[in-house]
Image (cartoon, rainbow, N blue to C red; front, side, top):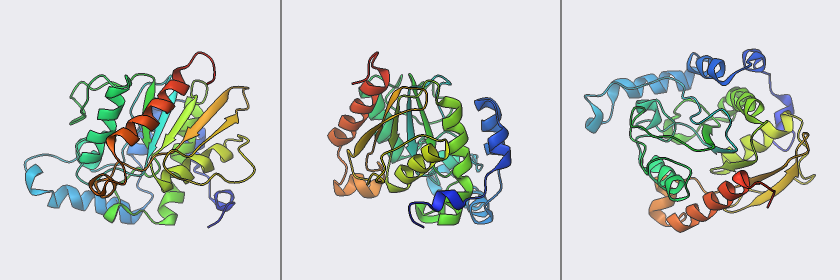
Length: 253
């Protein structure tokens, strides 16, 4: 795909015309642009996991979660098949969500330490969570075309949030790429050499509005990473703390 792959994408005209997060969320929920993902998320809702057999699954694309004036945007990969695809809220109802919301709570960015359902009373403070891909993909592996098809939703969400955003925290390689591509499409001037992903990798850039912003990466809190020790709680807490402190500082750090 390469460094300039994002320039060859077909713009989502609907996404580009959206003027509010409320309208954006509704448009995302109604999206059926990717046949494989549409079929998969619906199939999972029928077959279900045994422990959730009595529950109704959301089985639609998943919107962002968090206030309109957020200063920190966390970008994940995609909804979990039995997590957000079941509950309807990003990073909610699975082990990855337990790790992320637990870290946000410990760093003063979430009201409670868990996120189990859309009605559990969870609230984020100055922080919003979104995904690079809005539908649950088989084996958590969206294809390049599916990533490209979904990209305009993230671009639009970032455009609408940009007046208050100060920091971005992509979780994993795909989210890192999606965040950088979206910033470039929005006209932000990033480092000339494309920044490489890694846990704790970071760079600052001066936004078009004159505000300094931070992009800092973290390994995704997937079970594959947390079970193997590739990502520990202290590692995740450290990155969330840095992102939160920068985002909410009165003066750039």
